[in-house]
Image (cartoon, rainbow over all chains, first blue to last red; front, top):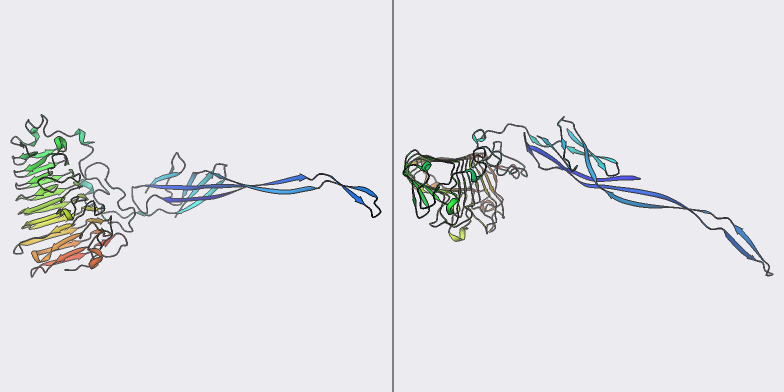
Length: 104
Length: 370
């Protein structure tokens, strides 16, 4: 099971003045990829063998294991759950989990 | 500096997105009127969001509000009716004891030193305030041209100050033709902290012999809804003849952002007609934005940001430190700059064009032709 994030984040303005409210918005999502290993048993076999003179016999064969795998992908929603700003600025994550704000 | 975002998927998986630090302008902006501005939200707080360069000064309408003070008047509904007893009654006492209403939808102020404060002149179909006395102040009032199709303010007295007012032309053709404000008096004229928008003709026209004309800390948005083809000049500010010892256009924001089929302007137009008198003309620390069409072609909506007929004046003129977006300026691509200084000034006159910046790329806009 793997998660592939395809999320972009951006500021709502190219430039802020001190005191402005800054907003970061995220968009996109996650794709969950699941690979399932499957094993099935073939049935047992009985082979009919016929000699040149017409004599007939049968030979049994044991069942064998057949391995296979299937892959499923599921899109999933994402939320912003944490922000670490190296400048020490404190960001507040909005209730929708898709944006955060801070004062410039 | 970076900002690291933790992203959590619905299944609990955790990812990470790294952002560069936000671009915060930490240098202190020059006050440019902010400390004296009316309370309330600015009209265009994101005006500079998409420009490479913004002005180093606070801009009216973007960094602070202009128009009426919303602490005093949260909405126009909290303002007074200038005709509280209907149009058949007398004007409110606050307009002066000798104020008169006339049937052409005009209230004439006849008393000197009156301060008209906190009135909604959009009521009753929209009323014109006519300052016929001296030293009149109009403060914290709202004007909107309505069914009466009259201009907002006229002046024939000596001395008029208009502050903290909003004037909305509504794009309505006035009858008789009039700008939002017509200064035709003889004393000083001051327009400060006002928001003028959607005029059919000019936002402001001034003439005759005002010794001092000050336009400071105002927001002007979209003039000329009549369009050039209909004879409306649509200037942001138009000098219409007379002698002008001092003209100051400082610290304002001018925006023209409609298609030219909606509104078209000549920009700031000053054309003194008596070169025998000395004029000081300053256009400094303004924001001049022309968008909505293609510059240098028929789809532009602004002739020039500033037009001055150099041959018609004598004195000192400065066009300095203005921050501009000339995208939709018709003259811009024709001669490489958004200014037009036409003719040759009288000997001894000087013209300084410096420090003007194109906000789109930070380049100088000082080049000009005469």
